[in-house]
Length: 225
Length: 225
Image (cartoon, rainbow over the protein chains, first blue to last red):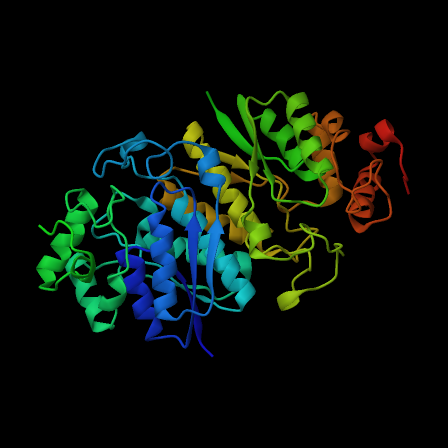
């Protein structure tokens, strides 16, 4: 029976990928990383989305290594500023190696489950500042995982080259809009979402361009702009 | 000033690599992974070796992810049997993704230190059963790290293609024999080493073939065979 492991953050992109995966694999397992993110609501969202999607196993893996290795803006106390730059001209929300680490752990779990297919919502269209979200990085990592695990790992990235608007259209086409009502996006961590932070604005723009009402706002209200 | 990050387990191979690195880089930082290994003496050995080698920073990083992901013989309660096979015909001491994970974390730390050179004692000669120790895996991972971190990562593997005997000769040539007196090898976790387990026997064979007295046995005594 075909199965896949979906990396599920509780956000819009990974949830869209979960809907995509449900239409392509008979069994879905989901893995969420608790890496000390400032907004714990993300973990609650991931659990709710996983439950509603009927995944077989939802694994929440604590990863303390990144916090131990030091400061960044998505875990810890400093406020995130999308668009601001940090070391090496990279966005100051860049956590070095984060996606590489998460995909490696997801693959290790997949190995134990006897699964070779991984699904992740990384996208190089809107967030081109993150080098570990790009297609060439994922292709190289897939090769490293294949060799290192002796497993024919396939990293599926349904959103890699599409816009936020097309991501919304994809969610609709895959029957995933209802799941999106339970996702988290806001960088300010607010529920209902603040509507003003760059993440809320990016999400709103995608829904607007796709001509779709955001089911999260329909459920919760909040500052739709 | 040139610097390198050495992945230091406290064993013979990584310590030999540390001696190798000291002759090639002005500054050495060492990283050791505390992943719940059964034999805590390894961590003590790593600290002692790092201190005696005069490394700048010795980072001990707790990695709980592998233990959370489930059983294997090197962390947890089950006894390790070198040569025994587990899932997929791999050695039952195989921890899926372990080296990939460790190298990724080492690279993330190197990124923060502004270092691009990583040194690891992986070797495909004697332990060909571990797919994540092989040269092609390390080459693919190097490429994934380069792309994912936007850093010209170089993974140095001085022991990759040499025998245990040549590894001992290398340690002598690099002035590292003294450091080897403080390393740990025994799978049974004994100090002095048991001399009977496969790891002790492999070490003894290497020293014997190289015609070098093991400085660990000279320091501690133990069952030399």
